Image (cartoon, rainbow, N blue to C red; front, side, top):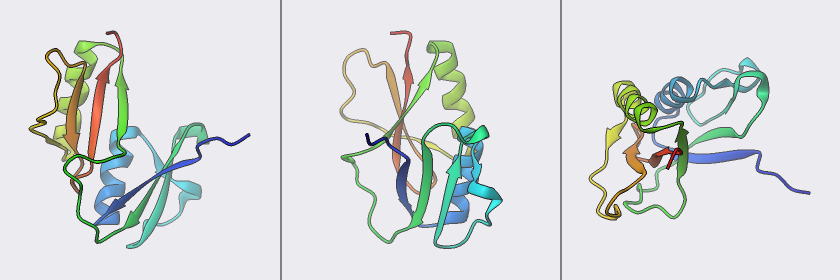
Length: 123
């Protein structure tokens, strides 16, 4: 049976992306490896969970990406706090034109422009 091992994000600056996603998720480079200019795999504490791999890419960021990360917050207060924390780490709010009337998610972009959502899972 297959399982998802890594989500791979293309980024312009691997070191900057590794610093952001490492702080955002509490992840660290796999096996204590050095963060290079071309590639790094970040793992959750204790190694459990889906890895985030970051690879250098020159492709343009998609305004409406076909694939993105959803990060789960426990409730609206946690969502607000996490959005503010992520913005403080370098994420940017995205003026998302596809929000429904009463969204349970907030769209952000990492420092490379990759879109991701912070979801209020209490709804």
